Length: 130
Image (cartoon, rainbow, N blue to C red; front, top):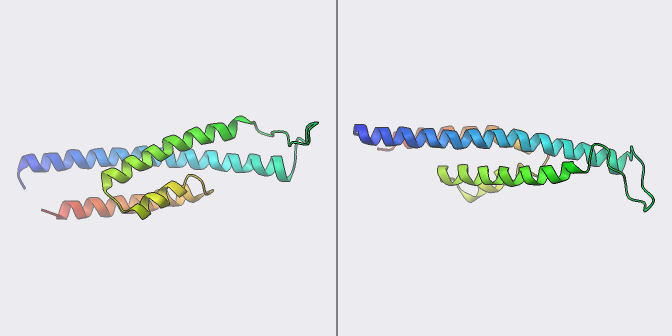
């Protein structure tokens, strides 16, 4: 491999690692917000900590903003997943698993570790290819 090709490969690897870092941050933020949303739902609908209003609807416990914020954070998470997936040229099954990480409690933390393994494998395979 010539120096120019090596430089281009190094630059691509750095961009891919940057995409993974963005994904990783969003995986933890999304997972944390999803757990907070689940806590709100349990306290609001199962335990009914704040009771119900005059119409019979459960009152928010932590705040009605949590679902809204989680929804927008999930959108950013989905964009970072797509960016990482398209850069790494992974299969459709991998993007489906990563996207599910934002809607299934605790799965984003599990998928972050899996994505790290997949990224390491992909970069190692790319380095071996002439």
